[in-house]
Length: 208
Image 1 (cartoon, rainbow, N blue to C red):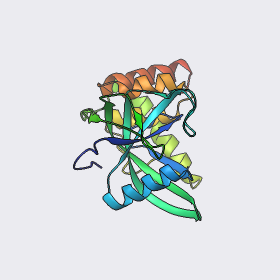
Image 2 (image 1 turned 90 degrees about the horizontal axis):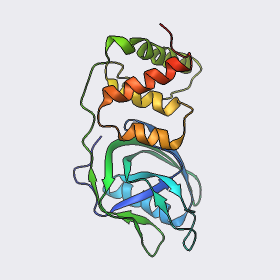
Image 3 (image 1 turned 45 degrees about the vertical axis):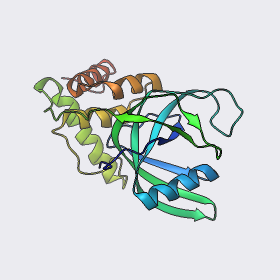
Image 4 (image 1 turned 60 degrees about the vertical axis):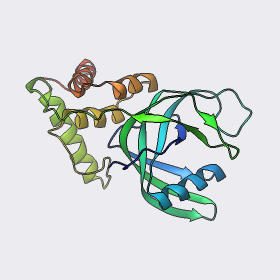
């Protein structure tokens, strides 16, 4: 999913999470600035940017200085439901990565914005023979979750795409946000999957 033109400046939603391309993101939106942002995105069909919050309070203005990562992922609205007046349940799908060109600034309504440029998406690469056990383990995890009526990832399930497999594992791994951020930023999806494979083997999640 790709926007025809990247909004300039890009509206930002700092979160204590790392969004990956192709990932599902659920949000409970109640602040006026983000309710307005959701309305704008619905009207224009444009994405907003999700950045991992490194430090600083994000609630309101006048708090500790905001510090976010320079690379984030575009979030495209997929489903929007009104939980009750003034509160939205939102589901987004992670799109392309982007890199900030300047530090974020805050508008009068509290919304963070910054000029940004797209980061080239992963090149389609097949998982190599050395990581096929990790691919199979993800396929089995998806099967078990679906058996329990859980839909962990957005279809289609691209098990023949090294970047997709790596990204889905990165969502599941109990590692720090800083580690997830570094994995998300890696340009080579094969290296990303190789690092994930090494972690899973070290933790005995994958053997053989």
